[in-house]
Image (cartoon, rainbow, N blue to C red; front, side):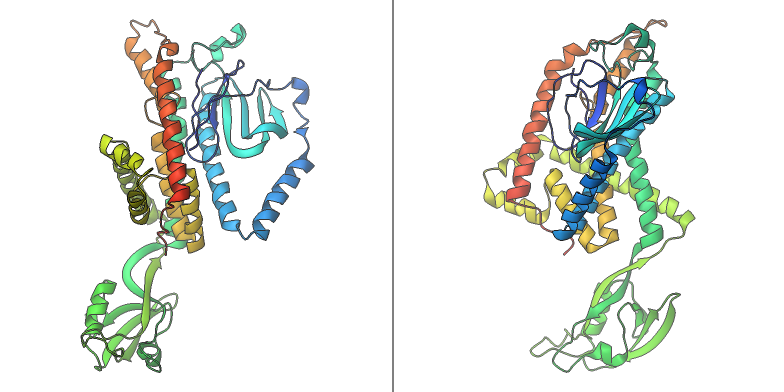
Amino acid sequence: MIDRGDTADIAVRAPSSNGARHESNGATGNVGRPIDHDTAGSPADDRQPKGSVVQLLAVVAAILAISMLTHSLDLLIVIVAIIAMVMIHELGHFATAKWSHMKVTEYFLGFGPRLWSFRRGETEYGVKAFPLGGYVKIIGMTNTEEVDPADEPRTYRAQPFHNRLMVAVAGSFMHFVMAFVLLWSLFVFVGQTQQTPSVAGFSPVAHGVDPARTAGVRPGDVIVSIDGRQVTDPTQLEQIIGSHAGVPLAIVVDRGSPARPVALTVTPALAPGANKDAARIGIEIGPTMQAVAPFHALGTAAVTLGQITSSTLAGLGHTFSPHGLSAFFNQLDNTKAADAAAKSASRPVSIVGAVRLATQGAQGGANDLLRVLVVIIIAVGIINLVPMLPLDGGHVLVAVYERIRSRRGRRYHADVTKLMPVASAFVLFLIVFVVAAIFLDIAHPIANPFQ
């Protein structure tokens, strides 16, 4: 059996005989097979956790210490965020499977040997040694899986269409919930970028010539108007200043919180050898972040989510089109094409590139980090809905096909073994694609978009 995973790297694992898993092995959308043949545990373990809590805490402390010593806390934050994304994805499958009375035997973070776990009822929860993702195990995902006859009524395959469909799409649905919550938090607690220019710093026109400082302009001031004209973007501001060398201009800035208008007078100056229409006042313009009211932010987040989803769909469509795939694989032996794509950020990235971009975003601040994470989250959610096993979309396809083939209350059961050749070819393609993307991300990394 090939089962669906949720991470960007791809692995093929041996089938499990005691229940199918929805599993995630890394950070953004993997496919794989379960490798464990572990049992869910015995009732005697219901109260006592397995493994050592001390050992688990030691691993966490070691990871944190290494991150601090190597000055890579930004990277650790990104990795934790991506693992959280994977586990929340799996939580969607877990919660809907439980609600549908399916039997869920495991919900784990990580893979490999258990570090710590506990049982509640029939489900074992815990942490394994390699925190590269996570999985939830639901019994009877396909007709090829052997299940205890007593458990057959609670298998995934035995449930009505609407329950199977709900469980299959729940993981990707959680991606859009996560993205919406992050966007809402971004607008409320960090703010929304405004077009009105603000003063990020100073850059003197020449030695001893610093018009903005002389006029009393301060970092953080938002420029409202100059020469009696309202300022709506940095280009307009540059044009007005550039044509008024040596001419005093009235400038109004908003300062403080709450903002209050402050009237100043600034005299643009020319740098030595500069064109007569290239006067400056010696300021560096930065984005203006304005907090959005919590209720209003609901609509803003929804609109932004729709825009990012639409652009992500368009990007994925281009990437996996014949032309897009040809251009992508051409970069493997064409250094110029690879460097051009890296400079323009016009190619897909692997988990390596995604983590690098998110880390660069974290170094730039909460605004950049959250926006990168939202794009990653939405992209993974969409990819998981591709109608091909072992992805979630493959289970959706099987459920819909069975629904169409069912007649007069008589349930049709699809034989998924017939899909194995196609699914195997798809997995092979993903392996090749991901390996190629990792190579390009290492050899020709995408240029930092936050510089």
